[in-house]
Image (cartoon, rainbow, N blue to C red; front, side, top):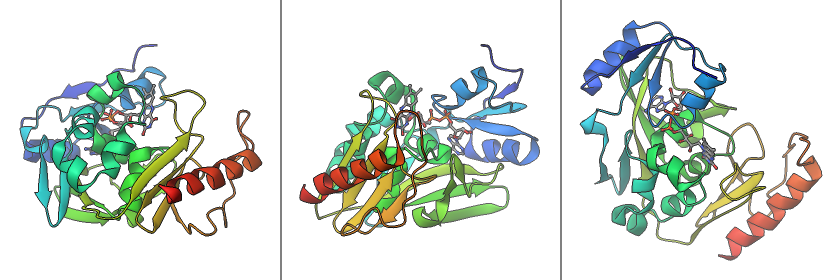
Length: 250
Ligand SMILES: Cc1cc2nc3c(=O)[nH]c(=O)nc-3n(C[C@H](O)[C@H](O)[C@H](O)COP(=O)(O)OP(=O)(O)OC[C@H]3O[C@@H](n4cnc5c(N)ncnc54)[C@H](O)[C@@H]3O)c2cc1C
């Protein structure tokens, strides 16, 4: 399938990008395109305008900030996976990135694009939540910092407004044990269920409409996974228990 007709914009600065997002109706940000382009091709998204942020050099950095590491909106997943600062200060992120899709997808896909896309089975959304990280969003109305716990609303739905550009994500440095585990039908597929741990904090992914914090002693309390042909709710609950045991023993 070919995508529906759209107008393509390639701003040269963050200021220009947010002014386009603020003035164009039905505009979408194009980052790595690894989720957006398939949605366009399947005609599940029909934006009138695409605002390509790939030329924004301001958003290509990974740097130390406020006792953690900030990752700009154009940083590729593959770059973050091997970044020495992230490996040293926030090792959960590189571990999570190894489980995201395949290397070719990670070569283009961005860390922030995955957060903005808010897939409930995303490893990176769970990592941001369990680490108690945050994202920065900019629009013509100003800048706001949103805690991970307030960011994810539901399936592919966050509190990001259509005119907001997510400029960076911030991950606090961790000292204690971190681990992430998931079960997928094939390597690189979205997880049927997953668990991420940072110290005593635990987050689950792939089991609800958004990533959830859970009690390590009773991780399935309150969970009501949906029934899907390849995975019954009972099987998903069983997976959660096994995966939580695995990450808590790490
Ligand atoms: C075969 C396949 C398997 C995959 N498997 C996994 C997996 O196992 N785990 C996983 O987490 N992901 C997986 N993905 C998705 C992949 O990680 C995507 O790269 C990611 O979800 C989106 O990042 P992107 O940079 O490509 O964003 P895009 O596709 O460009 O954008 C995705 C959405 O986010 C919005 N957006 C992007 N960046 C911003 C921003 N800075 N500000 C505001 N809005 C923004 C876009 O408007 C769009 O709505 C898979 C993709 C494919 C094709």
